[in-house]
Amino acid sequence: MATKQGGDRLAVLIDADQGQHGVLQELMSEISRYGTATIKRAYGDWTEQNMSKWKGSLQANAIQPVQQFRYTKGKNATDSALIIDAMDVLHSDVVDGFCLVSSDSDFTRLATRIREAGLAVYGFGESTTPAAFVAACDKFVYLEILKAEPEAQQVSVQATSKEPTASPGAAELAFAELPELEPLVLSALEKTAREDGWSTLAALGGQVSRDHSSFDSRNYGFSRLSDLIRKQPYLQMKEVTSGDNGQHVHIYVRRKQAA
Image 1 (cartoon, rainbow, N blue to C red):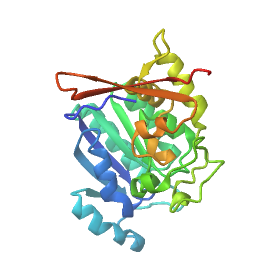
Image 2: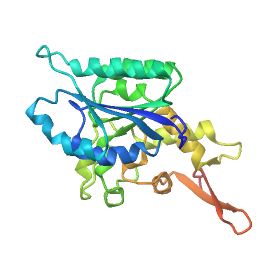
Image 3: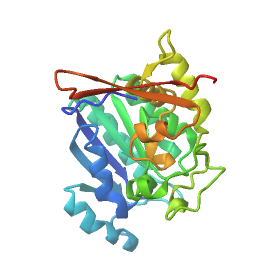
């Protein structure tokens, strides 16, 4: 995952044919975690009656609607318009990263091309988004979790999609192929642990995100990584304070030792 820098300028390009207008406010709030949205555009055929529901959300978030007529039935002209604009923005050198909002695999090559130029790509789409597009992004966030209440949806300690919980709202997080958590975490821990087996939580989280761009503790029902890791029975955590008044807390993680 690309490192967040509060001053990063981001181009937010939304495929309105694929995006969800109902989560737009939450989407923009999520994007603010990665940088500042200096370009905000939504692409679609706004003459279509079903697109009128976007109007209020676009105005509330100061997002520019870009009109693209559907010249031929069955062909997605919106994708082409978004890709052309993205390349124009890329070569104008006015942003540090892109937020591509779509569940369409057609943007896979666009994402890889932007990353080849050294810019970060944050993807946002539904849980049905093809794996190729997800993997092409530095970070991919599923739109379903933006309206979820993680604390009310604690999943099992194994936290896999194969074992859904009966918690309220858990159905909203029914991802098609959510990776099993244990091998994902242990692999990252092996890469980041010191000789004594301990790794910092920050290093562990960063490695997991680099290995799997779609990793997010909220996918597993926890708003914070520390809460997710603390619930895993195969891991051990410790907190070390520093500073004159112990104001700094460093969290360390290692595989639980056999008794």
